[in-house]
Image (cartoon, rainbow, N blue to C red):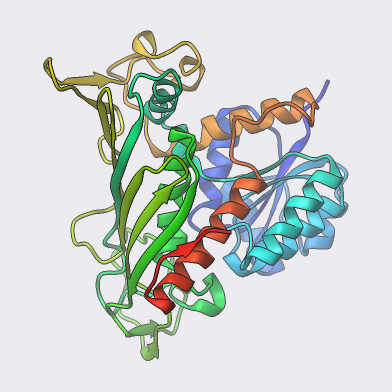
Length: 382
């Protein structure tokens, strides 16, 4: 039986990551939709895809398309996901799922009614050692979880000349750093511990209240030196830094710091989990190492090796020990789980990947963080 083809919406930083991962899984690609017909044609040529769609209507009318990957700017996710589900397509959406909890709640209901696979790209879950942590905690190896600490920090917006659509609330939402990277940390911790966040106390800050907006467009995580462009100053209404205290459902405590203005940290997510029997720590910039802490015997460092991982984790570690896996591999493994579900066709089966329910939960959390920061108080997560 032929596999359903996938179409991509959005050709910026993360769109090509999706395409590469799908190719590595040997999934057929139908085409790409960018911000204009010309840009769609250009993106199709650059990405080696069969077709550049002129419009979302054209993409959704293509009978070859079985699944739609949404990697467009945040404010477009809700409408595009809604229309894709209505057209009978499976949906794989970058986070955030929507701009507010009302929209994301509606998408959860629509996905359930449509009987389609609906996933959100919290890819960090799929580092093999994060999956290993999840299984170890579920097996009781850490005992009762006492507390969790961690951070997600970057430096790509350190200077006031650094600019991207994400810094504008109108494009990305009222929260930026918490929503853009903090939700990855929050989703990961809740997934691997099995504990939901019940209360938050947050403090966020716009470190650079004004930035210089270039006349031309700027790519996310642009690695090349760009020629000087004419700029204009623009007021910034989203945060560069955030700190969140957390209460979990079992009474455990937690703390998370997020920043996009930490020099030298390119993409660093860290966590340390303390339990009654031991502790664990992991760093995304050293993703093939897991620190295991003990009280009465030497600490350990587990190196990612399928032969040393639990049986349920091994399918998500493709290479032997010593052959490192990283960021692109997490998308491959995430999409492996998603398309296994699509191919199986069982809409009632448990999902190993983050779903629209998880995407909605993160938006509810972000709204609690916003309220907590505004009220300078603890806020219960509804």
